[in-house]
Length: 113
Image (cartoon, rainbow, N blue to C red):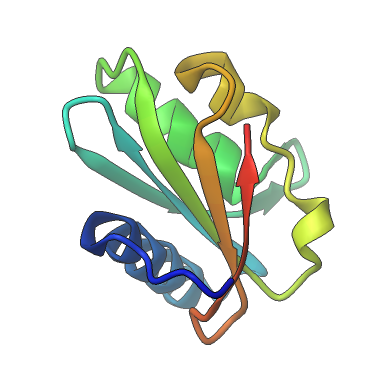
């Protein structure tokens, strides 16, 4: 990505990176809702439950009353193509930016939900 990120989008990338590091997970994610509130999460892998960081961040937003999303970010050690943006579309509609960054937080690409 050659474009500089908006400061609010850079913030959710930092939150996603922090969530990933805190949980020592393969991926971390953060979303910003329509009111500007942010939610961060890491992958959950239990014998009876598997959620991606992005699914959990969106679920956290929904459970807190969010009715829409403005942006999402995923920090992962996997490929950007492995990021499923469907859950962002479920809450935010089509076209919401999903920023994907490597483990160091450097943005790789911006997908659209």
